[in-house]
Length: 158
Ligand code: MG
Image (cartoon, rainbow, N blue to C red; front, side, top):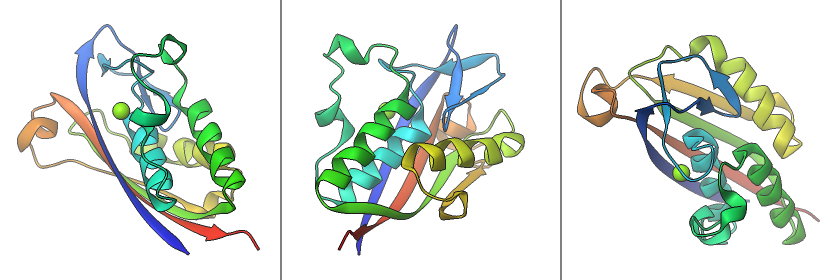
């Protein structure tokens, strides 16, 4: 087994859709980025790549590449999982935490778990998504951005 950790941050701005874990969430602001800026899926991909020591998503899907402009991060997650499979790994389980003051994410967590599990081709019971505020402190607390952490376990395919 191998373990990996991922962390990501995106700034909240007006005029962008808010996509987290592949789910569009109604809110007055969205995350700024070259792709769809799905901070949760980005942290998860970095955890998966980290577990395999395959670098990070900035290296795999560079900002400078127009192919990834507005990209659906769930499709990128599928690509990451297929690269892991080529290297002889399958995803064991993952655990993610989103740090956001607003909006309330609890109503969307089950949908996020299903979307991510589907993209990784694993059972939803192996995908944990949690959301917390930071009690009004720091950049997430002030609503300037959203951060996400993820840890992932990979298993070697015999
Ligand atoms: Mg990112």
